[in-house]
Image (tube, rainbow, N blue to C red):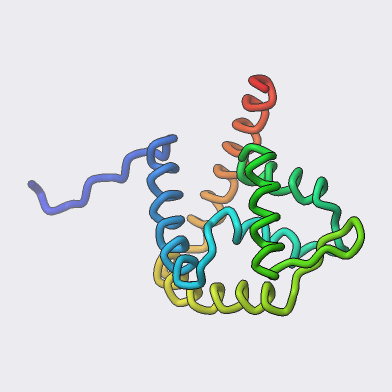
Length: 149
């Protein structure tokens, strides 16, 4: 060995998957301490961050666009959030409760230092390049998925 580090392998689907599952594993560990699953957190965040209250159908479509999960499973997730009183139905629209907002805020606060350690020190230009590549991969994968379904 000459003492120089080998160049990193080019990004590919495996590298993307490994990075995704490593980061998701960290988040799921935090979420478990709050008694929620990853899918519940994504669904709850969709309600909390919406500009206006949404119908369950609108929210299912939004979460499905993110997770590519079965609509029936997503509906069950919203039912779980309603049962835990993290969401409340107001007519045909869902609203987050104070408990739902507080849960998301607590999980975000708990995961923030870990996220900072994971992402910290990566040069801005590398993050920008990775962002462009990931956006393109997402766009292409979504197009291929649309063809399959």
